[in-house]
Image (tube, rainbow, N blue to C red; front, side):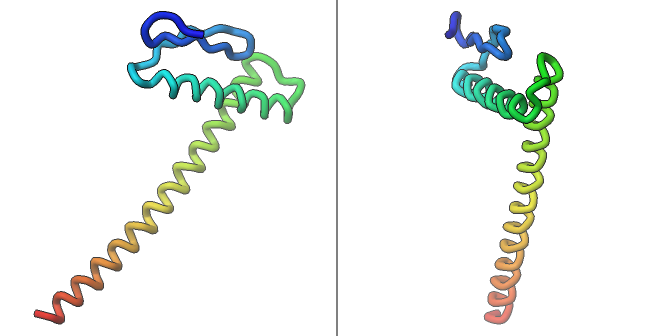
Length: 100
């Protein structure tokens, strides 16, 4: 459901929110709403008695912790690639140095 340029209405826990997405980011907004709804459903399954703000906060905390883990993993991978690049550059430098 949407109205106006870039404004999307998303329903979270029975509440409708009108959110204006930057141009070209409408799909990202809808995907984010779907991800939040999935996180809410997953959290509700684990903690069936949680409702309202408590459910929302716990679901958000779970999403944030997943994001932090992904960032850590990404940094580890980048560091590993950087080490590989440095080792390759070192080998090339030695090879060039030996030819001189």
